[in-house]
Image (tube, one colour):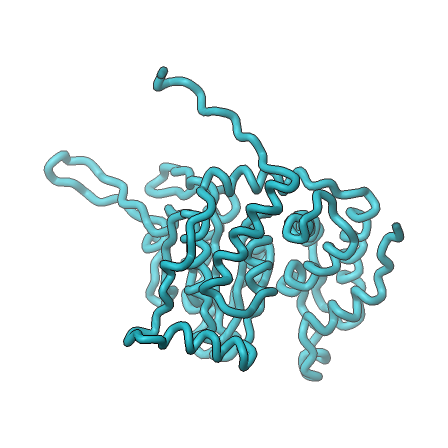
Length: 331
């Protein structure tokens, strides 16, 4: 075989095969990540759409477990970075190390060179370190000492932040928040789910970590890339695109919203709606898909007016009222 031969062209996975593979991943991850079905679906939507995720929730709700289980199910590499105030950009991207024997610099690649990157408590690090992820997230490349290195797809950043403890944090600027396809909220589990989790983890084991051996590897990295290509081909009618655009445009004029979503919000809404359709077993997008994913796609792209914040309203409250007013296309 010729070593210089071009790689085989990517064949997108579409139709029933795409939906079946997505369902298989969901089932396997669900063996370890008990409950929180909506959060799991939204993570899978981001994976299928090729977007990044900001996860918000108090510590101890299984965010790291979710990412580890997902990486096992899709047989992809996984790296975790704990963001702290003293974390440097090179701690994420990598750096050059002088080799006295060869009198050359060797590139030591950082944890960003992976498939799934968990950026834990991203708001603990200063803006300069937070921005080190921007190039990787947007362009799938990293620059070290003036040289660019491509990341191997699929690449998904899952950044977490604690919504309660704000002392010593550096809030993400709007420009960086806009880079995340979805903002996923993870709350406390139901009593039944928590009981199942405690029983599963504590059964005859001294450690508190979950046994991931029951999570089977059902896909590989190349299949994920092919599924992302197939998701991008899911049909979206012009009326549905217009509906998504009207929702985003309404955030710019809605009473109580000080800053509305930009055009990237419309793009994110349509991309995520395609993946939502895949999880629902369809090869076309409906207005319900757009409405279903609108809050995760837009909640981090709007800023509420001070009076609404004083009243204790959340972005989801405002988006709920907005979605009720924007008329959906009729069949």
